[in-house]
Length: 306
Image (cartoon, rainbow, N blue to C red; front, side, top):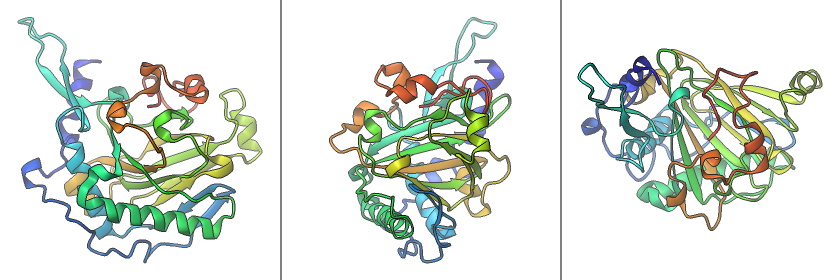
């Protein structure tokens, strides 16, 4: 990675608030009535549901506080790691802080059992239950789901780095081996999400023409669920929109996006997947192995899937 690339993450590490100024999130969001102001769920296809405005601005800030307090913990629990920068004129290589997952794609992650979030566990479970319940009432193909783990993904940007994530399937062990929905809440900058069953680079144009490639703009506070017949569909985040962060989250996130994704992965030891990347660990499912770096139709190089 170039010296410029290593330097670009400095402003995205903490937003405008430094860690010492970040108050505890507290045991419950300001308004614990999840989905009280949400739009009716939209069923894009059997097993694919979007809930716009799923969480209010106050609830978004509470969720962002929960995520950022975890993300700012030291490695390997937090979002960032210190790696040697290119050697200077004197031959020294100072440490630079950068995202722990895919620095070239501005992507960091933290994965843990829901129980590890202490006082936040109960309201987090309640949020997931409310989203799954709303999706199931709208879509008969959506299975039930009880979350066991939470994946936090932080997307930051900078010179020569455009945050994104490759076409991939969530078929690694820590994703859960069932058809129960993946439940994701988007915070901060808006993102373009795509999902397509049977996707391949060669077939993308034909699948798109047939209406099988679903695209949705996820704005701060929106949620998306995919499960049942689409649980193992390929999906990607093709773009995170610059300067689109919700105003009420700017002090916490700066120019960044957070994704909070609930998983039903019973029996998984979260410690083994703190910074898990399937390709590196050799445990990816067939879909992830086949498509982890298939970004030619989505983004630039270096954006392999987690």
